[in-house]
Image (cartoon, rainbow, N blue to C red; front, side, top):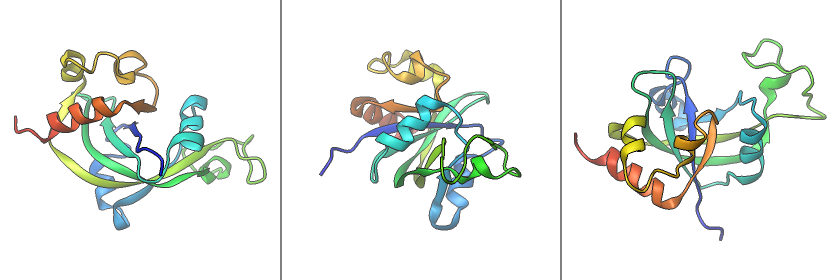
Length: 158
């Protein structure tokens, strides 16, 4: 069996929040609408069932990791790309030649407190984190030790 890997996904909470994920049927949702090739490749090729996901609220004050999820559906074509009524259509992507991919994630646990970007930047062991160094990427890898530190921080009372 493959070793469990870890990821961070970003979403603007006014568009789709961790609370929204928790309200979904079975607490599961398609992680669709990603239109970045590096993030697409990660979802298509690397994210596997059972992998851990940190859910990050972006473009809000404060930006923070607010909970965890699990990958429950490996990469498959993102059909919102060929739906002209979707928020993220791409006429170059078709069912026969999909360009964009998505995964399914399931909400696991909401943190006792958010772990802010500022706290992440100041926490030893997180200085090499992709979030700190390549912050614009919407889907990014997380090292196992970074996962443990952030989950511990989010589980601790303020």
